[in-house]
Length: 99
Image (cartoon, rainbow, N blue to C red; front, side):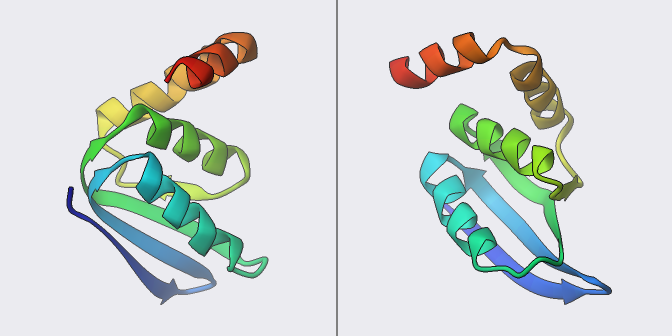
């Protein structure tokens, strides 16, 4: 599975350009990188992402909830993020255990 994370400095923010297929392992790697960033603004550019697994969608929803901006997000991913947010917490926890 091909996946790449490129980091760049933008005006007043750090930009992570993601490309390829994003799964739980890749989301975990990205989370590690994000945790090393300071308190500045962070932007995730998903313009080159070709496939996103459900665990990665959960990560993206959580990242947005923490104030990380997501741009160039494929429409199907955006709709999955919205669905993830509308799902009751109990259902999300149960599905996380079943996965």
